[in-house]
Image (cartoon, rainbow, N blue to C red):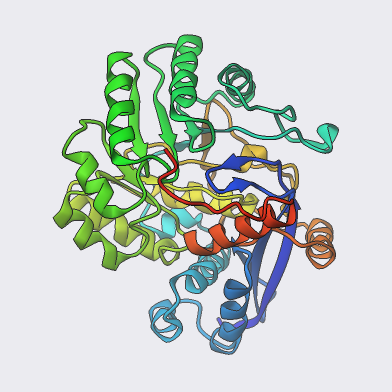
Length: 409
């Protein structure tokens, strides 16, 4: 079996004006699809971030992939020397191979460790949607602790989430502390909570907030990237007993050793898009277990292909201690047939369908490709490119003096 054709398909989809420490999401976001086809017509699909760097890297890989044996993945990874580009291709290769042999991807990864994968309800402060009728969920403005409880109620009632994650770094720490307190009052003090300020707090502020969280007897699973550097995380951990998680400062294998040596983090939040696909994520799972680190999973504004990929690799990860995050409930658009991937009781149940268990809908893909060509979507693939994209967006909105300086508080 050989790959006859590799297609790189930039797409764009609607996104709510979700807030984070850099600013607000634009209302159009970019992704990139990879579609591989063999001579007998078997198709495999992958999905990744949508900026020009990723698209260019994937387009340069076409000559290496076309004509290749889908089983020979390691030589491809070494030739590419680009974990993100390789990750998108590898997901498509596993999807293709699964369909060819009639096995779900999780079996190709060694078998599932769990029949269903739990996800967290990912809560954002946000502006009001410009098209409330087209919103997937919570179209209203959410810019206070009280309105965040209303948003969370929608998530819990519709999807049954047991774990709630708050994207912080938007309101002053005092207001975000009150938000966590109100969530615990509404859903129970035993409800697992997380907060991710994206590095906007100083070490001193983070210590104060951690102590006050402890006084309130909240069930906080971890603080995610509360302070702005790996060194600051190490300083913080000398003063707080909450686990500290990161997806900003440990994003590749070369960063694990210094993080362990410094005692900077307890939990690494994987992302198969930039950890080198399924194989890189499984390697991370093994390394984390070696150093007794926890593993969770980071999320971005992804579509159904990535949602399925996240579920399959999560099912096959023995060290996964924390429910992965997902933006997926926020997405009003998709590119797969029979969308959306179902989340029930806060979980995705794994089927025995071959491959990833999803198929591209050609009409939806074409619509998303047209939107990409006709708009200027938010597109990034790293912390640095994300900061630049948000800075440009804020400048265009008239706040030309705005910069994502951290720590802010």
